[in-house]
Length: 304
Ligand SMILES: [Ca+2]
Ligand SMILES: [Ca+2]
Ligand SMILES: [Ca+2]
Ligand SMILES: [Ca+2]
Image 1 (cartoon, rainbow, N blue to C red):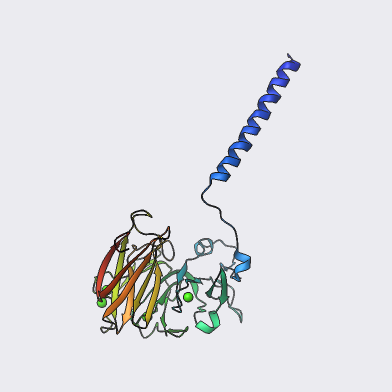
Image 2: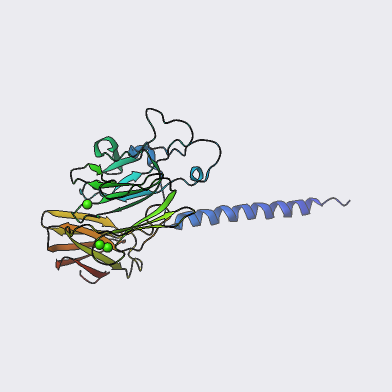
C-alpha cells in the first residue's frame, strides 16, 4: 500500500486545522449574534418543587407523561404566580406525607415563596391537567384540576386561600384518567364552562348553569409588530377597587390550548375604568371606560 507523502500529510493537516478554525469562528459568530440568551436561575428562585410520578417502575402511561402547570396571579398583586401539579403513589399505600401540588407566590425579582399550606391548594390527587379561570365571575381566578382519579374544583376566596367546592358544584367524577382540561365560554353567555379529555373514553363537557353572578369582560388581542395572536402580552384590567392581571399564552394546562381569549370576572362592576395591554417589545395600549359583559378586540397600536 502506498504511504502518503510528507507534503500530502501537511496538506491534510492544514485542511483539518482550517476546517476546525472555521467551525470555531462560525460558532463564535452565531453565539455573538444569537438574540436569545437563557440563564438557569432555578436554584436562586426558591422553587424546590420536585415532581413525583408514582414510582412503580412499571412505566404506566401516567408515570411517563409528567403533568401540566399553571401561571396565574392567584392573589391579585399583579405578579404571575406558579402552580405545579404533582403525581401520587400508584400502588404503594399513601405515606403520612403524600406528594402534593405546590403553589409558589411570585415575590418579584425572580424570587418565589411556597404558599401551598397557606393557600389550601395542596391537592394530593394524581395531577395531570389544570385549567384556571374565574368561573363565578367574582373577580378572582379559580382552579380546576384534572386528575387521574377524582377531579377537583377550587374556588378562590379572594384572600390568598382556596376552598374545595367539588361536591357543591356537582363534580368529582371518579376513576377516570383525565389529562387536558379547558376553561372557556363555550356558549358565549359570559360564564366559563369546562371541557375535559378523558383517556380511552368520551370527554366530559360541563356547562356552567350557575345563577347569574358577577359581571365580566372578555378580551381578544391582535398583534401587529409583536405577533398576530398577542402571545406574551400582559393585560391589566382596572374596575374600581378591582385590578386584574393575566397573560396571553400559546398553550394552557396539560397539552391543551383553547384559544387566546382572556376572561375577567368583574364582580359588581358594570364598567371597566381601563384596560392596558403590554405587548412583547414594550409598547402599551390603553382603552378607557368600557361597558362590562361583552367581548372586546384590541389591536396593537390601536390606543396609544
Ligand atoms: Ca401574584
Ligand atoms: Ca372566582
Ligand atoms: Ca358559558
Ligand atoms: Ca352558562
